[in-house]
Amino acid sequence: MDDTAALELEVEATRRKLRDLERRLGDSRRASAPQAVTKNSHVAPLNAGDTLTSFVCAAASLTKADVERFSRQMMVEGVGAIGMERIRRGRVLLVGAGGLGSTIALFLAAAGVGELRIVDFDTVELSNLHRQVIHTTDRVTWKKVDSTASACYALNPDILVLPLALPLDASNAEDLVRDCDVVVDGTDNVAARYLINDAAARQRKPVVSGSAMRWDGQLSVYGYDGGPCLRCLFPVPPPPEAVGSCNDTGVMGPVPGCIGCLQAMEVLKILTQAGDVLSGRMLIFDGLRFRVQVVNLRCRQASCPACGDAVDKSIRLQELVAQHPEYIGVSCVSGSVLNAQPLPTEARASARELFAYLQRAEGTTANCLILDVRSKQQYDMAHLPTAVSLPLPHLKKWQSDDVLWDEWERFVSCYHTGTDGCLTVFVICRRGISSTEAARILLSLQPPCKTGYDGCVDATTPSTSTRRYRFLNVDGGLNRYHQEADKNFPFY
Image 1 (tube, rainbow, N blue to C red):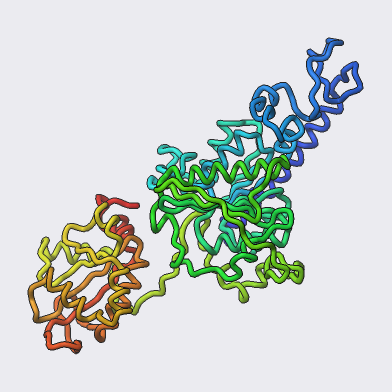
Image 2 (cartoon, rainbow, N blue to C red):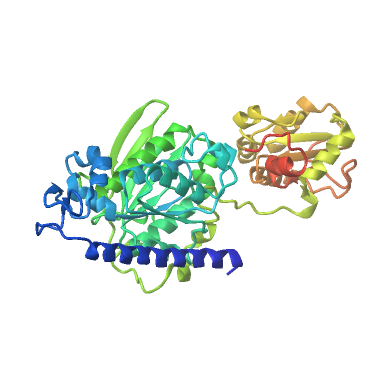
């Protein structure tokens, strides 16, 4: 365990000790306070010297300030004073302080949830702010959990917020879940969802799960009152690249806001025991066409590897990593999983090398092609002046249709008229993940060239063309290019 992780654990232990001391102090103050003339402990006197009572509340712990702050909430059918007291005593674990978590945290804090634990080790970036409305421009570079705690306390100083800047993994997931009442999944990657589900299922804790991408959102509650968990429905997780995340595919800001609001509402329903919780059902939201539907899900499976009858809870999740390799993919909480395999050294270039090459070329591309494999939307947002667009799905389709060479030659001919010599192709995307896959596809066209940027030897092609190629993936993509070469290129 590194120093940072050890300090985080020490801070959490200190917070727990502080909470215990605060509870003991509160008990001591209540025990020593002057008793009202009535025998009802929930009757509040006008002041210490009065014999008249101010008000009587059905929930003993609620104060005048509580009634004034939460009156509109307490007036709702199914909540009342008793429901409000349950909310005040509720302990909620929120995993993720991004687009979903921002809204969830604000509404749970506003509702008066007694203890809100927030897990996320990411930092606030400028590109977060259009959807992660709990963060502000002046808190860019803050840890998201600290920014979230600050906003929650500004809204309601009477709750307890525990910011946990820890990476979620198989070694700590069960401990984080153990003594909470409800788990809220505000992440946006598949690996994290399954790890959260499995940890909660073993502890018999309900999970309020939501997702948001592009114009679409989904919401369900897993493991509540005999309902199915995520693995009951989908025992094996799909590969991350088949699902994507808002970090890769984009998202309209109001969508995670809408889903996050509904997640917060489901949490409050669970705590207050009000209404029909969205267990065994899933809400599907299509914001572009404004369609909302609720579909029924299959029931809990007795053979489920997470919540089934035969699950051995004495075996910790950390010991099951070999059976569940998806646990290893939990590289972050509210970001996507970076799992591209590296290319051979001779097929890689750094952002600085690309920048140096462009400076030497002075804007000409006689022997060079910069291939941008991002989506057309991202290419139109910002691209290098001499870059040409060829989205990765096009390359993959050419390969699957067995027309890769012909289509590639036709594409290159549109941008490069020469037919002799070696053409250096820099393959680039946002973070170097899609470009790695694209470069690997292109490398299948011919053996790699092993000379410098200005020449190429020993490369054969399946046609009569004398043109040869040197394919170089730009490590780290355009974000690395911004960091190491040109700060004026947008970082997103």
